[in-house]
Image (cartoon, rainbow, N blue to C red):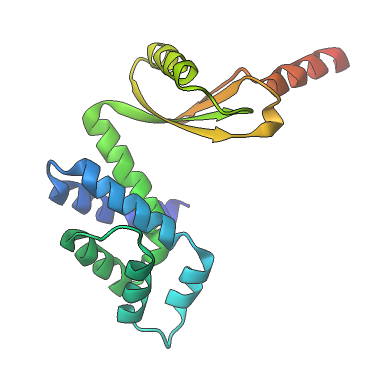
Length: 176
C-alpha cells in the first residue's frame, strides 16, 4: 500500500493545484474514474500488452456515466499512458484528503444496521461534528451484522456504539 500511495501522491497534488476553485467538480469526476478503475476486469484489460492506451481510454470514457470535461480526459490520458490506471482509486483518496484539509472537513462513514431517516441522520451529524470538532462529510453504509446502533469511522478514529460491540464487550467481561 505504501507504494501505491507514493505513486499516487504526485498525481493527486498536481491535480489539486490545477483544479483551482473547482475542487468539487474535479472531485466528482475523479471519484467516478476511480470507481471505474477499481474494476478488476478493467485492470486486466488495461494490463494486456496487446491493448493500446487509446483503447483503454475509450473503454473508460465509454463506461463513464457523465460527460467528462477536457481536463478529466487529459488527466485520464496521462494516467493511462503512464500505466497507472490501477492507482486511480488511491489518487482519488489523496485528492479528497487534500480537499478536506483545505476546507477543514473530514470524511466520515457511518455504518448502521438499518437505513437512517433524514432527521436522525441530521441529529447524528450534529452530534458527531461536535464530538470530532470539525465539519464532516457523512456517508452511510448499511451493515446488518451490527444488529442495532452505529459504528462511525472518521479517519483513523472509530466510535462504535453498536449492539454487536456491546455484546462482544459483555462476552469478554463474562469470560474473564
